[in-house]
Image: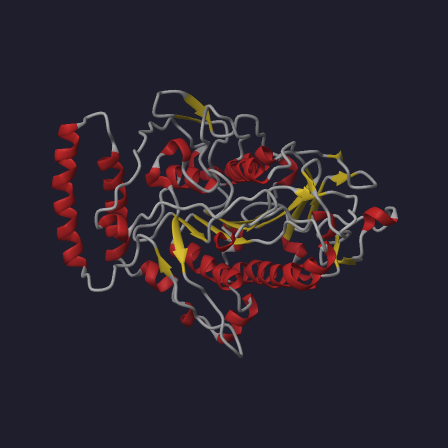
Length: 447
């Protein structure tokens, strides 16, 4: 069991994912695809849209945002921690001394310091943060990326939703009631590494690259053969929609294979050595660089995950030596790079984890789970620049002003994407479901 890479204190393991795409095209059976009928989701059409894409930097495990975005230097010894706040390029906004590069681009960012919810458990909290809906046994809600895929068709020849590594935690990151066709394309392999600078790594995207020895013509012939099996399958069992779900993947994967847009987007060798080094020689850093290239090519939603934030012990040592340096380098580089390429105004960067950590430091110099107060960072896409939203109380226990919840942030993101956050979709059983049951647009976050 130890080899399964347990990723947090509650024993969650990286889930076994659907092996879709190229493997699926060659005959892998997919789970039943649920049908969906969409109702009008656009609010005031494209005129209301500020953003065209989202890049989610996911900090799995629950980052100690009290030591990152909302320090308490005046708090008592057992709360304030070891780190000092520093000034940033945003007037009046301070962040951790271990995020010096991010401090320089803070004038292009928004910090939400008054975020809170009531689920201090990794799996359900991850579902809440990544779907914008509190988990319930009655409905498996789709991830934000899956909703964007459903409601904002991508440019031709590129996948709509790409994930670098997978968000662990139950049903997080998947399409829920939307059906398998709206799951992300998963990136395999490492983008980066090598001595003396960030090297362009060997990336493989499930569903986009052909298996060794197959030509596109052979794959298209295989597709025709599978369609024949699909028709037989439907005749045998009209209640099952497996074949139709597989057809959706066939169509999208073949479209991508015929195009070279995705292949070019993943070719990080086209970037200068200086640019690759600026993002950092890690899978997280090079994944963020690839995310910019994917958004540039027309991809709507990209997720890059960085785990290890479950700091029950040695919180400050782990933050300053292992966690904050790569985050600082990659987040600052992404914001700056998007701005330099003229993409920041149309791309939302969302940096978040499932919850924060306790203000009180435990006996192991760590911080435990705490959802009642936390912070996230946002940039671009119509969010205010150089702004810190809300405050927490003197000890960081709870919001003091402008309290908001994960579904509020999700609703605000979708508002900026030109999607009505209160629009309804239907489950396969015909049940109408609002995109975000309780979320409201936080007007003060808008530029």
